[in-house]
Image 1 (cartoon, rainbow, N blue to C red):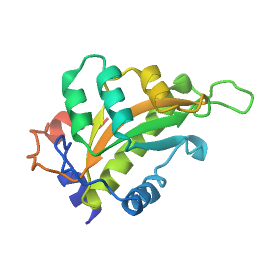
Image 2: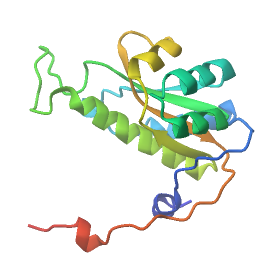
Image 3: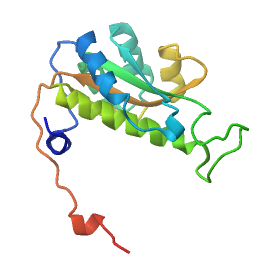
Image 4: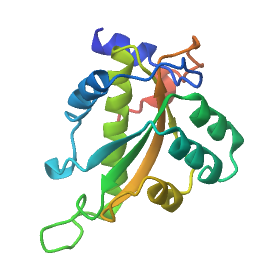
Length: 180
């Protein structure tokens, strides 16, 4: 698939078939996602794939802050990717000071680039995804025994799509572009 076609046709998928994405396909998606740029090439984004039904159910039930729709999506997906990031690397100089006024917020920026690259690569390989942002970070970290030097950035439900989605209305270029 051409890059622009992939960007134009990728949708947030919330209903999945039961089949899990194979380890080979997951590896191919990560092979592409690892090419996402990052602050000073720190490559902080990590992809923790939860296949264990009990762990996935624990996250859905106890980590979604009562947001029932995310609970349903997680339980309906064959796999859940807990995207994490190595803490205290992005935005820092070697002496520990911040390089810019954005301080450590570069971590989330880099994780976001990695997540979007992951989702586009998945779409290119026929795998659907939806990025979920309503969750308790520390509860998710505990549920998957995340290493102490990592923070949870997002949850991404993945699997083979069991729905077709139309593109939602988008703003015009004139609404989005400002040339100074």
